[in-house]
Image (cartoon, rainbow, N blue to C red):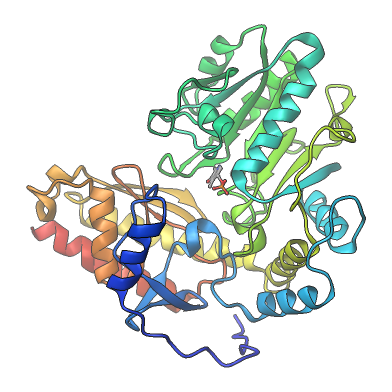
Length: 438
Ligand SMILES: *Cc1c(COP(=O)(O)O)cnc(C)c1O
């Protein structure tokens, strides 16, 4: 891949004291996140530097957000150019970047329309409202989601999420959500009630530990939704936007599968990588479904957000797509993602006392560890394996992301290079090797 020279020299590192930064957070920032003991100051491509000047290979890219890595020259240019013209206009007016971005997103999918918002949680809220509007006149409102799913931290988002830990303390839940085991078509069939109007799943469960939907599940859900007049909605906030080497994970999962040719859900939520680090979310609605013009269901006055689809956000998202297309990052993610997964599989086979399995595809990979108590190097420790491993990887100079108790996620920038991938695997192997000998 060609290296792009930054338009401005890299800014000098400001050596703040880590302890001062942490102290300010402790005093003034709501303590809703448990943070690692790192304060970051600068990034370039797939590397970031902490305030002491220590470099890390970033295999998390935010949490699957910085699609082109950090400080990408094209993103900087798009931000500068567009902000000099028009940063924000309300949705009372038209502007070119939003229409063009919508057209491109539709082009990767199927005829339909796009609504722009600012985050994944907000995109899912749009899907819930779409489902309720679709079922309203028949008195249907219930959305089935999967156990271990994650759909955001809004009130409806935590109600939709199939994990108790996000709901605790915030009851009562928003009514109209029930959870079924993932990848289990019979469970969905049995759970249907006269109130059910939609099914929402992630193409690949992200927070739940990197579990892809099977092709049979996707195709079976589509058939079921067609038979029972339900909306099939996919939360692609984490697994979408070329992370799997195709625009959508279901496109990758269904590649070459018999009977999958016309598969398309009715609605898809997006965010994370869409703006390459600039906050923007969206949801796509299929044009025609169940004999109605689904994409026009949310008519004037039914849904809105002040910051949705600003010229700045859309210009950046368009530029991210320009780079992904020009550099064929989808193809790159498929090839290097396969290599990464093979390497992680080799580690699983070499270190069975430490590792259980590897799951995922493209640049959305999850390495499942044994429980902490069973890993020689973690015997007698208290924290869950995933968090301890991520901390040890920090010491080895690599950023990764825990997912549940035992899974460590790799969600690198789509332009991670082969040498960087090799560097990451070498560091992971060093840490895993040490854990294997206690
Ligand atoms: C991150 C995520 C969300 C929530 O997105 P926010 O931008 O944090 O609101 C929703 N669904 C999935 C699958 C996610 O990974």
